[in-house]
Length: 475
Image 1 (cartoon, helix red, strand yellow):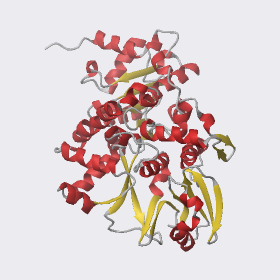
Image 2: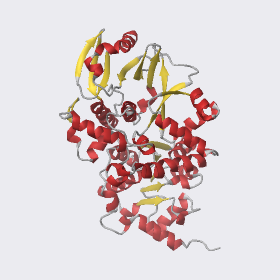
Image 3: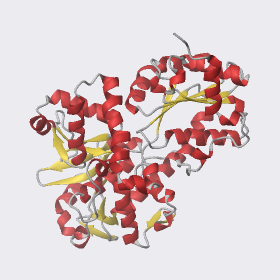
Image 4: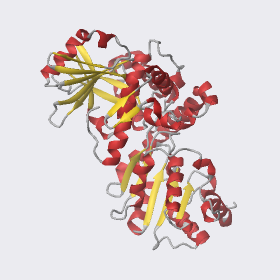
């Protein structure tokens, strides 16, 4: 049996690293994309020298991880890092089959005459999940070569998270690249001017134009490639479902968790996606599917680990959680998944309210605060978004509406205002479709804000606060 010649592997490495020979560095294919703001958050982790750690770049498929890597490489080159001290390897290439990370580094050394064991080098292993026991290999590199700056990235997000948690404690730093925020989406289209940002104030001079873009974002806006490609928007199912969702459900999750009944998993995900932002229960799902509740719970955990959904738990009117809660809400982490699975929906369609709520929640999923987000439901009413504080008090709350009716008739919020009074909450945010106004009732200050503007503001401020290291402020 013939082995792949070493020289052929070295030629492939040279092809993937054009900066070794080309004066312009990174391929124009990657530079055509506008860098996401996450680049400025990612790069400091890459260049820090005080802590010896590898960075594990994870996130859903097709959100731009490989592009982010190449933008980082271009920044390193611009900062004066020698091209021969930067290595990029797409581990899923068949030529690398059976090669360990250290063997790839040896070939890198042979090709560039760079001594990676002593010189500071920046190494990017993309699609690393295709290497068996990659986390063990990476840990050895981190422990053995202090000058090596390593990044491991891949599309099988659930696999990366699991392996990183199991084997990388104290050696790996996880970095999540999520789908586009609404503010990023507008920036990518060159339409950030639809929202005027003046310090802490956000205004929409033309709310109808902003709403049109917001509806488009909810249907198509989570993936950079979809946003900029009308042909994909004409058939989102082919790109998003076939290229992204099916690969997760049919390949990533079964291979990682040993799932045998893929149809069962796919059916559950389709049900959850259609019911995004609605309360569901394990009992309901079990009755409908004929699948045991314990199995459904495992599937839900798998789908959450793959960054396809996010589970939000319930509290009661006194913000007490339920010890044996079987009801919860599930949100798609990217609202445009719904359009890909079913069909795009319009601003006046019945399902738009749930999709708006999903879109706003999706902005918060970019944040570590997502763990403290709940919804409140009691006999007389419900509140969509409740942020719990350290002592299980309520920091702030939001009621998501895609209607101006509640701004015109604030008395309809009576039960929610009772909740606020009961829990010492002096301020409540209620989203609308177009109206902006303030009202004070029952000693509660109510701010009515268009949902599109709130979605923009949440994503914008969360990214800004991460850069400034001050996450946690109210919406």
